Length: 312
Image (cartoon, rainbow, N blue to C red; front, side):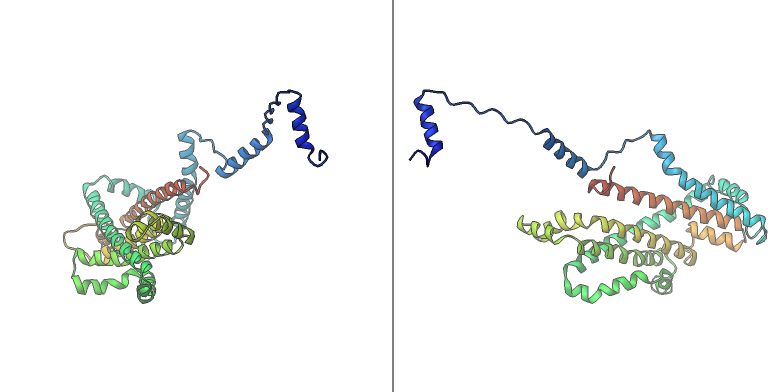
């Protein structure tokens, strides 16, 4: 049946003729397909930005801030020239910056800054420890979330100054009273940040972790906590803002004998009607807050690059 199997007959004819089987020629490389794959890879990775010199990058980052400062100073000087308030109530930028230059050269000033920062970091670290434990527990146990989930949000929205009368009754005029308000002001933000981060961990990741045998502490350590880290850092940043504001209010209201912090020195300047020094301490508190915010932004940007969320 040669007509039914033509390929078989051709093969038999070739063997009968003693011919050597022909070698298969290599297929030509599909250069267009390779280019398409390379193009997809480049699209996934994003365009590579050429980094300029260090001075240029610093200038590009600094000039908007410098422009904003210049605008604020110009408006301040215009208000002073308009004589909206007497000069002893609202001094001009020249007077304030001159007093600030003299202030930062004194040892007493740096002692006050050191005391305030020690209080701030001590209270914040305690708030992070307490908030992390509470956030992990609430996100793990549904009955606990139903019991205190809304309470945590309510505590976060309360003004910190509302806690000082109770803190003074509990701890008298002492460091503990200030620490109490700083912790209770920051811990709810930290807890809510962790709870939000854990809530938004993709369910697919949890199923993959379950397949890999992750349970208990290992599941939290290697899967849930790393996945919730971006939201957790946002909670830490917000917690620091609450703790810093609570501390400044505490230092103005709870004056511990012998502890000459920034708030105490600012209160003394206010009692002596030294408006220029009051503004100097306001600038100091503002600068410290900005520097801490820069540190948080640096950590956040490093995390975003680690997760591939930026084009740099």
